[in-house]
Amino acid sequence: MSTALLTDHYELTMLTAALRDGSAERRCGFEVFARRLPAGRRYGVVAGTGRLVEAVAGHRFGADEIDFLRRAGVVDGDTAGWLSGYRFTGDIEGYAEGELYYPGSPILTVAGSFAECIVLETMILSVLNHDCAVAAAAARMVTAARGRPIIEMGSRRAHEQAAVAAARAAYLAGFAATSNLAAGRRYGIPTAGTAAHAFTLLHDGEPAAFASQVAALGKGTTLLVDTYDISEGIRRAVAVAGPGLGAIRIDSGDLSVLAQQSRGLLDSLGAVDTRIVVSGDLDEFAIAALAAEPVDAYGAGTAVVTGSGAPTAGLVYKLVEVDGAPVVKRSEDKATVGGRKTAVRRHKPTGTATEEVVVSQGTPEPAPHDRALQRAYLRAGEPAGDLPSLLESRDHLRDGLVAVPWEGLKLSAGDPAIPVTIVGGRNGG
Image (tube, rainbow, N blue to C red):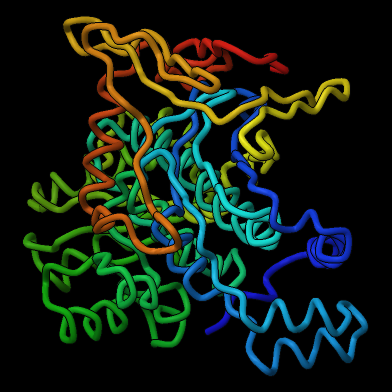
């Protein structure tokens, strides 16, 4: 499926003008970065580059796309002819999926002619701003959960295609499973789900609903016990499934109090191994507040698929180099640092990250325990190597979070977890 029209009108306006004045083929370098992190955040998470490489490969203007653009008066004949033969032939490099980033980190560099790079701007930002926002929120939730599994279950709170991308980003960040079957099929993510309140209400009482579910799924299933009275629901669930019931789920009320009461009741009924799963508008703060309670797993929906208060990562795509020379935007509050960047992360001998060093038009002076942050994705429009698997990206993020100073993992507002030092050019902040 073509991704060519996942763009803004003005990209093709610029393209038309550049083709007319002869500047379209000037060699350019664009960078994706964040001027600042969303309020309260101490790190960002790179996500979506795997999807992005596929989207660039599908960025072709076929007859249907060209016909629409011509009929709508978006492009003239010369531009339509150029677009009909479009294929990105430049270079793309950037941070790996699962890498942490900070203000000023050059998380993606796109190099090629102005024409071929500018038509990718909107699509690149659309993919990365969404996926990075979800992954950062999900990573904070995983940290708050302290090893307890979280199921992503926010599909009904997002656009149907965004829901699939959000499930992927949440899984990358460490979620255990998703409720979204399309994400399970497309990306190999484990899926999970049992029943909603509607299933209980369908039947003539909870015992009938529970018996039906146990008959279909076995005693290891998870029974939703808060349709009517939670204590009675638990008693009925254990009566139907026996003490070997897999789990109960609570989706409403004061989860802290209810988790304690439910644990005590389950134990008194002999269901000492029955797990407690909680859901219901959970974000990282709600999950952290349940850390000391007898909760075994969480279900997170709206907060994770909407970035938990930060639905976009705030990334920008800026021209930093033309014909090998740095270019700088100097407008107030939106200045850029000219020149293509090289970035490394510095660490203590123990492995704790201390600083990110970004050099414009050069490479950082080597230091012990440096780790290079950029890798090639495309060279001359062709894949530069196999992309890491989603599981490898999960591991990469997990290792990166282990290296963050403990203060940087706090949920409270504060400075970025590590400083970024930009050498060369002008740091616009």
